[in-house]
Image 1 (cartoon, one colour):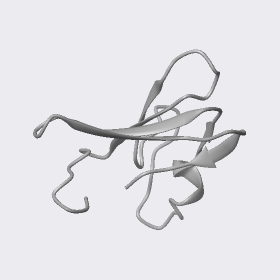
Image 2 (cartoon, rainbow, N blue to C red):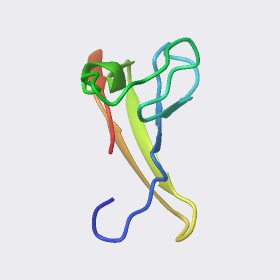
Image 3 (cartoon, helix red, strand yellow):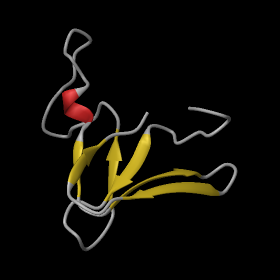
Length: 75
């Protein structure tokens, strides 16, 4: 959270060039997180064209668009 922006640990990435996929920090339905694991690498996802965070309480959104495939995460 920065400058009063509350993303509720959710962000969206466009990993297939067609639609935005919802992502959650420190969450994977196929893997149980433990407190001792390094969580940084598990929170990076492919970004083909955009990554976005939405603050539903204040109805605002930030979207970053890129010109080549990269990886991205949000906090």
